Every structure is written in structure tokens, then in C-alpha cells.
Length: 385
Image (cartoon, rainbow, N blue to C red):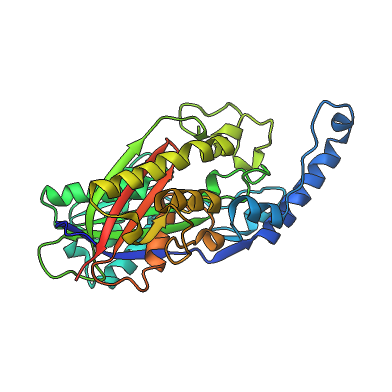
């Protein structure tokens, strides 16, 4: 327990889950069919030693490597089509709501219902995610307009830690005078994933989460958690990278469907050095959480729940073990990546949104996101009265 005063609270969350789910078995069937086709078409080069044959995947390999069993996606057919292997999301006119905004509006409206709030109760919108579908106008401003919020909005990107950084930013805006801030995390991770890469084709899913922050100067609007403190950390690394951008498009590229191991498009999608990431990120995050709790005078063993970024089951288990000095139970460190896969910035918020049972007034929890950058953010909360 802790006696820290809090001036900003989380009053509601929302979640948009796409209608389509792909199991490991379905994903592997498509991937292995592509492998057979690739190896057959390149048999001469493979036999001559000029090209290495592609290796097949398996559901067992995926679950052992990640803990993932399935993932939700916006488009299933395009991903499982071995002639395409990327989602098919048709371009929309400038007059139509963008895909990211549509997802965010759905999650935001659920959060607003949960807190019994309307558009006039919110002053600003932060859209915090790993990849925006355009540079400008800001997706946040489009979301603001679609929701009818009279205020401001802006986008921010700190990869998988974007939600934690967004909460810290919203907290600062409220301390500067705003009443409430809506922070959303629309992630179409399937669109920047190379589904032809055995080492990463299973990692990501699509989703959107929403968080509403408000000034803690009266009775809370909903299922409220006081924010006791936030802490952010970044350290540059090339070990997780996505080079897509308007300055580095390669001449002749036509889209993600053209990606192969030898294609110049490969590094324009998600790439990582998984072992290096694991080795380097685990100590960064565990030390961030431990130091944050120490500075707030909170003993780790008194923390009721750790809502961690859902990237990799082993990574989460190592982090919680280093913080607690023992293995965490599933109740203490809930897992959603088995069903949702890695959803980048939204992962820790999905865990927070779906696993708040048995939290009593005064109980303390930690929301933590971490990933490319490297970036990491810790938000310590306490269930409000």
C-alpha cells in the first residue's frame, strides 16, 4: 500500500477487436504452402547452392517461441492468400473515415460509455501508435472530429511503449489545465509484418485500445485508478526496426505482396534481432519498474497486478521474475498475447482493460509498455475509492 496523493486518474478504457481471427494452424498452413511453392519455383538455384531453401514453420514452434496461439486481424483472406500474404485494405477516399480513425472511434466510444461521458467532457485526443497510415492531417485530429470533441488532437509514436508515453503526455496536459484527455492506440500491425519470414510471420495482430484520463478533483467518472507516478526510458537500438517512409521507398516497389527475403522491401517492414532484443530489453524494463516502485516507496510484493506489454511470454515472465524475485502467477501478470498476439502499444492496455477483476480500493498495479527504440514506460496506478 502507499499513501501518495494523485492529481490525475484513469477513469475508463475501451477496446476494439477486429472481427477476424487467425489460428497458428491456419497461419502455418498458408506459410508452408508458400514455402513449398517458393522452393519448387527456385529448385535449380537451390540445387546449385545459389539460394537457400526456405524452412517450414509449425504451430508448436510458434507457441514455444512466443506463447501466441492466435491473432485478430482486419483482413484474414489477404494474409492467408499465398499469392499475396498481406492484408487487403482498400484505399478510402479523403472524405471517408480512415481505417485507424474508425478503429479508434469504436474503442473511444466504449471508453466514453464506460465513464458515462460525452464529447463535451473531453478536451483533447492523443493518438499514440507504432505506425500511422499517413503523415498528415493527424489521425488524432480526424478522431477528434469524428467524435465531435471541441479541443485539440495530435499523433505520437514511441513504438510499443506509445501508450505509456501517451498516458504521461495526457497527465501533463491535465496538469496544465485540461479536464480530460482521450488517448487511443490503433494498431494495424499486420500491415507492417512480413508474413513470408518464418522468424516473425506469427508475431503481430490488429486492435485498438482507448484510455480516458481526468483531473482527480472530485468523484471519479467511472472505474477509476489514480496515477501515482510515471517513468519513461529510451535507448537507441537498431535491433527492432521498420524503415518504411517517404524518403526511402525503392524505385519499382509495388507493395508488401512483393516482399521476399531478397527484396529491397524487406527492411521496410518489421525486422528484429530477437535474441539481442530479449537480452537487452529485459534488464532495461525490469530495472525501470523496480526503480520506479522503490522511488514511490512501494514494495514489489505488494503490487496486485502487472499489466505488461504483450510481446513475448518468456520476456514477460523474465521481467516479472526479476521484479518480484519469484515467478509471477497469471493473476499477478495476466497474459492476453495467446489470443491477441503482439499488438504493439495496445498490448498492456488490453491486459489492463480485460484483467481488472479482484482489484480492491487501494490496490496498486503497474502498466508497462516496451519495445522498439528501445523505449519503455511505467505507469503505477492505485484503485480509487
